[in-house]
Length: 172
Image (cartoon, rainbow, N blue to C red; front, side, top):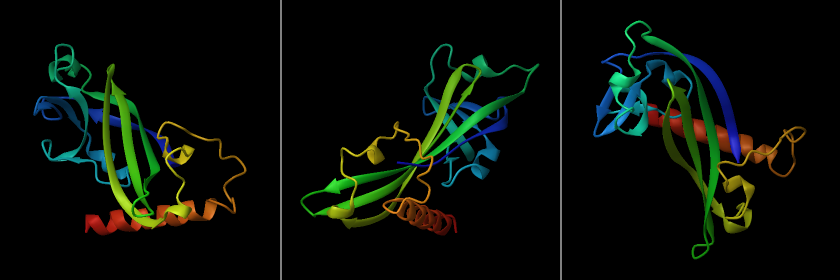
């Protein structure tokens, strides 16, 4: 179930200090990215918030994206938070996670970052189950008119509040 989705324009500086091939992956530092996300998008190799574009290869190197005449690129960054339920039938429990995905395209190359945190567990009878649209990260239901649903609306907001509390506690 998509809990939150936003797209924000962000100016990203593209030079030898912000674009790198670290551990064989093309990475970009975006310091302002942290203000858009619930979880920390810090990249240890960049020592800053950042995203990865996967394996460095011809056409996917820092030098392919750096343009000294245009050192800053304005990009649309999409941040999507998704609730995922994992059912454990042996334990008769349901484990709920908040997964946050960040994506953008910079000069034709897709960059992303993903992180997750455990929200909690509950009896399997309260879980959405493995075949529920709530567990399909690509599925987005039209929630028009559902914001006050008596069956799930309240639990979604409680889950989001719990997740935010966990994230804030982790940052301290």
